[in-house]
Image 1: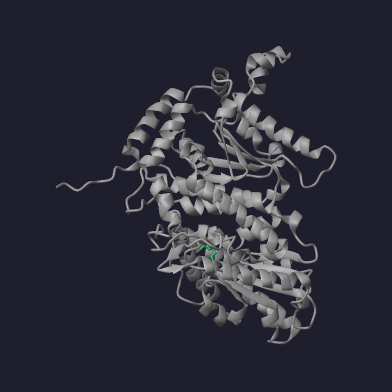
Image 2: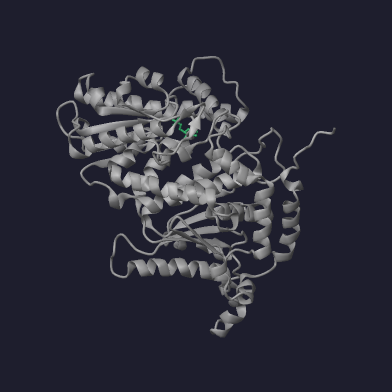
Length: 548
Ligand code: F6P
């Protein structure tokens, strides 16, 4: 019998049908789509876990949606969701489960990895974190000279930094003001210097956060922090009171000199970019308190349940994932803008950059073939309204189509005058303007001379999603992060790639190690890189003050 071969993505019937369908809808204008269906702004919406998604301002109709859902089904999305929730080793290249959903599972759930129910272990770590957070917040945990801790410095990079920073900024309203929080990620000494410039070592606790505990940047900063503490406090026993670690690697933690009783663990089935609600969130928990942290986990959990149970055409992460595919693969858009109309979410786009692009920036399928279609879009963004006075010009009148997610809250955490109405008026105005534009005739009817009207008109037909929540809370933040996590997963399933590995970061890391040795040992054998790299390194050596 001939072997049964799985069709590649582009051979799937739904993909073929979408390609054809795209030709038919491509030239439709959102003005027309809204005129044809007065209920469109209600019909093309979905709700889940307290979030409201309006996706009506996308260039789709009911057939598009039906075909996208069919594509998800043909690609086995349901089976893959179940596989993730059941702890199967869906991270195939690393032979691991991707079980971030276990980090927010309720205590009575069973999620088994290699024969062990992980949920009790997750809750045991959460309990230890809570006890430690309480000790710090109450002033019971003291530095080596007896002073309470007033500054927490998280040292980590990538997933060991972006989640903690984003959550700290996003939930600032809920944070204790008795302790200051700083984050050191970059191996640029400036980051270390500035973060430690105005704090007192006697009152400082470093959280060294690294899944592997081998990341060069993090270890360099952790060693600098150790020296900073020892230089100032002159007592090697101070390390015990001023350092804790968050890691999966106890051996490396103790090799660094941190007692493993001061280590908060997580597991290899948690990807770095999916780890902010594990022990990696220790700084978050200290900042907002264990109760608020639990509320954030409840938000994640609510979105997990929605993702697992809602039918695809009402499922927020699935809809957002499929719309991303629609734009990326059928309209050939290259980027997605994430535009939170909330200053607290200023680091949310940066967080989503790692989540999305490290997960889906791949060109090899699960069974090792090359993709013949585009994968992850480039994610970028800034809070509104700031972006309006910067790059929105291109979004409105540029030659590129930029699908975008607008995020807003109905209630403000900081009532000041009519600021919140003004803020939200701008959000609604932008999505309306992007969708419907303004014709030259409309511009001229307002008295603009004919020669100027092309410059002042707006084509419109720019796709947007709008995500609304009642209020920015730990709970709603949790729902929103899980929304994007599962949307990214949905896209990865359609593209048939492993969304949980990151081999693409390795080559640069290895080369940097070699180049570092060459920069430090300038009398060694001649440089053997390409002519460009050699010349750049020579110039660097010269200008840093050493002759090569
Ligand atoms: O270099 C990429 C990466 O491995 C990310 O995936 C990860 O979040 C980051 O580095 C930090 O890794 P670690 O937590 O092991 O220090």
